[in-house]
Image (cartoon, rainbow, N blue to C red; front, side):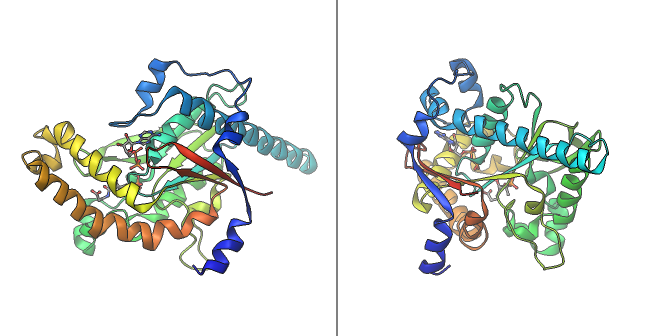
Length: 314
Ligand SMILES: Nc1ncnc2c1ncn2[C@@H]1O[C@H](COP(=O)(O)OP(=O)(O)O)[C@@H](O)[C@H]1O
Ligand SMILES: CC(C)(COP(=O)(O)O)[C@@H](O)C(=O)NCCC(=O)O
């Protein structure tokens, strides 16, 4: 992107500094107990109750109100057509790099938006379930491209969200196990007409690959991009890798068990290699270029705290 076009795209947003955004939380009741915040944290998370109140609580309020407004438009259209409108889930996409904190943001938004009376039923699906199986990735020569757009069954994902948005009572998504590093044939995630469906994944903001094609981003009602400096994200990726080495990797059933016995220096080198060869190129080529398509951009500082919120002008 040229600096000129990026400046142009930025002017599509209100840039709201954290302090100003946090003021919106005044008078809102903090809906999560400290215990609940602890449960939502990812591995090694230092997410504080203050961060939840100042940053994520106002976002959840906005999302819940946006979902109600969208439902009202649906009712309006129904009245215009003289038809009963089925209740259609409001679909939210959460995008960003590997290790930027998407899962934590998505889990927080699920918990917080479900506390508002307009949207009690909130479900969460991650797009890793739509990765091709390892056998299929091997066949396509894509084992080292996991997370790149071509490693996903894009049509299956679009089909899944289309069925949810067409009001089907029950829709199933495949399940990916991080422990097995593969799709599980005997497991799935079921979505039953929630008020809000959150779909979290690296590539959810990708445009359609061809002009006559549909992308999953065409089906979203609201999108969030979690953003931070590349150097910070690399740090977080390596730190998480080191923590997983002491935890999940030490399980003999884990695909990553081979990494459990590495020395600290070897583990850092391994994580840095995966970052450099897979996740950083994917961030640069595919993920970052979709940032300007989001409704809301969360800009994180080195300690994960959100420094500013960019909200698209309507
Ligand atoms: N708000 C936050 N505050 C502190 N640490 C965080 C926060 N969000 C994520 N992290 C940490 O950053 C790392 C990546 O987070 P995660 O949600 O797993 O990322 P992703 O889903 O984008 O790969 C984890 O180690 C997690 O504990
Ligand atoms: C499973 C992922 C592709 C993320 O998938 P997403 O839910 O974002 O679609 C990613 O976490 C991953 O495993 N990448 C492969 C490189 C690595 O091990 O870091």
